[in-house]
Image: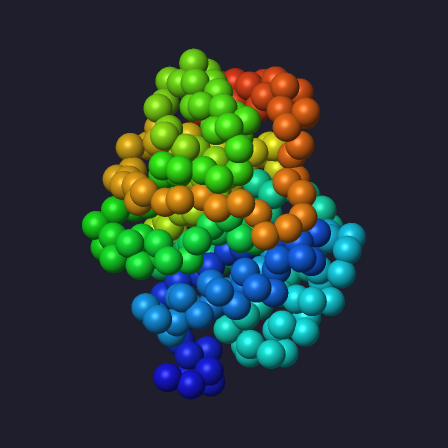
Length: 247
């Protein structure tokens, strides 16, 4: 199928990749993912959301767009955070009636080799999460994920194995009535989405993945800020749960 034929029909999947200041890795990561996904389907759009990068990431993306072609779309926006950028991609998938949305990070930690395992589960589950059975980014990040899991259980009563995992495949139909429940100032909006999907008992599955070291750059949320961000998350989760109960 050539690009003109592809663009004449609704894509089967929208790949959503938020990016912020990833000049060291973004070209390599996009090309790796693009090559892997084309092994399993050519009916896709790869949407990179540039979340107000202040380095040369935007110009790298624009050059990459010319190189790769129309299946790669670049959205430049003012900085709103990783979670809200994910939600922006979810909304675009809903607006375009694209059946599946696949979220993945831009720092090279998410290995494309596991994509096939997600893709073959698409007809059987509403959402498929990566389960980081091994992480090469340090024990502190592992501890942060464990604390997040406990926080969600105590605050929302849900047991999410890894609610912040940046490797997930979702049916767009389960997002349509959920995405707008999350406030625009919610810090970890992608975590809030995992919580809402869990509360609504959508059918989910997991795929074991290995989480690699970053290719370069720095994480958006520094470890020293985790305490402050954890308190912010708890406050926002309680407000979200109260709004759900009221509605």
